[in-house]
Image (cartoon, rainbow, N blue to C red):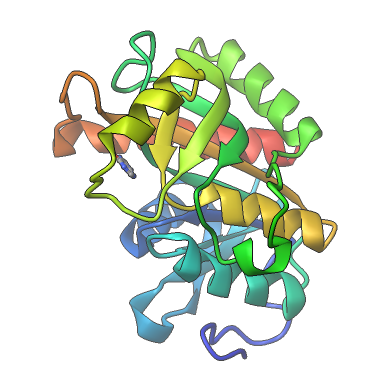
Length: 234
Ligand code: HPA
């Protein structure tokens, strides 16, 4: 047990999928894992451990934003021995070629600020995905014919953004989409010798204003979970 995770020692797998929404953790565990068992419900941040094709997997909610994800990722890595952490979540599309429902595999995650900024001080650290996981996820996505983009994303501290000028610069520099967690996940994984990746579904588009209706989110989310699982164990 840790401050924020109630699982007993040994109840968390070495491979952890991390959706932001705890109810998505429940849905994904009940849909894709065998023998899924609830291992955490502290603060309602649900976590489940089960098996997928015989491999042990935990699906643990991270909450929204880097400070929340940082708490769960730190405890999963440092106290429970997690080794592979894959964020599964949604993002806003930023390039014209990136359409709602497409997948983004985040090769890098830029930030203005993160919980690790205090450590890096003047250094502009470049958080990046684990190459093996990225390659395996790209193969899994291509096998199922999912429209997939691979490249840089932006991990923001705000959903309700007030910096159109900054977004303009990111679009200009090829940033594919915006979410709120990946940069800190990549940084923590690097610090502790773990593997990390973010597999994202484009749920809305900053340029067009289009948004995925809630009844269509589940299907796209399912593709993402299966790609993450295949990548983790390939
Ligand atoms: N901004 C930040 N995070 C997001 C967005 C967005 O537009 N869409 C989905 N997650």
